[in-house]
Length: 118
Image (tube, rainbow, N blue to C red; front, top):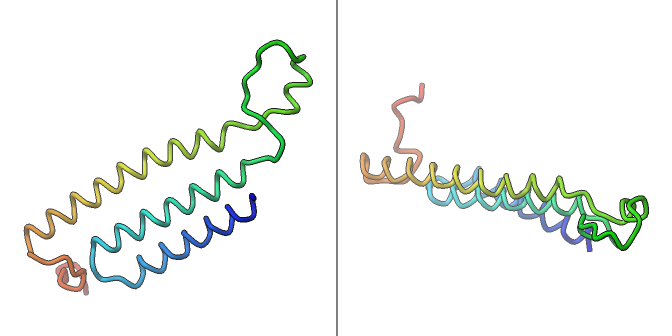
């Protein structure tokens, strides 16, 4: 099951990267970056998964030494939760910039913004 999640995550990342590099529309580029971000999150969760392990909740019925060998590391999941929040914030910021650019130029084509090109 972990191999499927890894392959899916890498595929999502590659699709997002391809979309970001080939599209000229800003909204499509933002969606592509979001898809790539989701792919990275899936890869991190898949790498942190260990078959046969359980959540780190100790109830006292099992000795701590034995329970420690059966729990999964919660750090990858915590990192992914943090990455999701940061990704949503960055996506909102990119959408706000795209909206302001559309208001100023009435276009979302990245080729029309040539002021800073040499």
